[in-house]
Structures are given as structure tokens and as C-alpha cells.
Length: 324
Image (cartoon, rainbow, N blue to C red; front, top):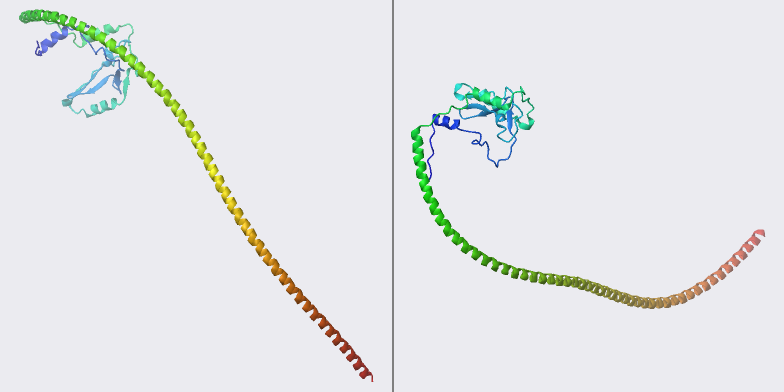
């Protein structure tokens, strides 16, 4: 059965808060990890906040035990300083600017170097109690009205009857579910047995497939090795054939060059023979020409001697004439 939300007035809230105990208050979920608490910002001794209607502050340092951190002592006197400013009270622009600037310099728990205890002899619990009395807490306990209690009792009795009927119905349902559970257990045992048999067959099949896969893998490795060896042999054979073909081509080229050289030698021999014959003929002609020139030279010498002889004779005659 769903209940509507109960609207609480001022007195109801006072009564609710007066009944709170330490066990009823949970400051954070149990699964929440510890975080590094912020102690103060900028020049403020605590945490300034900007709200929709004004500016205020809060002191997380006072609740550090609820967040799982030990209390090192009562805080400094400036830590609980109150900040409360409403926008309608005047110009708060400067305050807003200071708060924004302060949030740029956040000081967390591990970097807080301020002195905690102003008096180490005063326990923290005593200081909290005095602080509660100073701010008018706790709320005074307000007795509840008897009529409301009777109405609540009638409501609770009706709910108890409904719950008893629901419990009886659930018991009958539980018996039926137990029977169904027994049937399911038998079915589960049969299925489990069948599953074990199938599992054994499956494992045997897996082993057989693994053995076949290993055998196939070994065959593939052997074939791969044989293929590599065959490839190397084919490459060696191709290299040998290529070398043989190159040697044959080289031999044919040498043989062809040799034939050409022999032919050229033969041509040169013929040319030499022709030239020797020509030289012999030329030498014969030259000898004949030299002999002719030699005969002509001898004839010219004879003529020259005859002319010289006549010239000497003429000169002698001339000398005789001159003498006479």
C-alpha cells in the first residue's frame, strides 16, 4: 500500500528534528569513497556560496568526522564566522566579486596549515554542545496529539490484518512453489546427467579434433619444408640452365668471332700477296728506271768530261794566242 507524502508544518519539523538521534542520521552513503574536503577559499575562513537569493557560507570542517576523518581538536575561532547577505539589502557586487575570486584559491584538508586548537584542554564534544546551545539547538520536544495516535493505531491494525492475509496467501504459494521446486530439481538432475554425458562426448570429440588438427599441422609443416626444398632445387636448376645457356651463347659468339677473324686473315693474306706482287713489279720497274737513269747519268758524265776536256783545250789555245 502506497502512502502519500506527508506535508510537515513548522511544529512538525521541530518535533521531527527533536527525535533525531545519532543512529538515524547518515551523512553520506556507505559506498561513497572518501574525498579530500575543502576547508576554506581565499581569505574566507570557511566556504562562501552564492545562492539564488543571497550569499551564505558553510563549514565542512565541522562535519569531517561524518565524512570519515578524525577530529584533530576544536576549530579556530574564525572558522564558524557567519556570512549571510541578501540581494535585496543593497549592492552586493563587491561581495560577489570577492567570492568568485576566493573560489580560484581552494584550500583542501591536506594543505590546511592553520592552527586547530585554541585550547587543547576543551574537548571537541564540549565545544559542539556549547555551540549548539548558542545557536538555539536542539529543538524542544513537542508532545504529539492523542487523536493522531489513535488514528495511527487503527491504521496500523488494518494494515496488520491485511498483512496476515497476505502472509497466509504467500504460505500457500510457497507450498506450491516447493512442489514445483522439487519437480524442477528432478528435471535439473536429469538435465545435469545428460549434460555430463554430452560433455564427455564433446570432450572426446574435441580431443579427436585436436589430434587431427595436430596431425594436419605436422603434415602442413612437412609439405611446407618439402615445398621450400623443391623451390630451392628448381631455383638451382634454373640457375644452372641459365649459366649453361649463357656459356653456349658465349661459345657461339667466340666461334663466330673466330670464323670472322680467320676470314679476315685470309682476306689480309690475299691482300698481302697482291701487294707483294705489286711491290715486286714496282721494284722491277724501279730497277729498270734506275738502270736507265744510271745509263743516262753515265752518258751525261761522259759528255761533261768531253765538254771539260774541250774547255781546257780551248783555254790552253787561248793562252797560247795571248802569249804570241
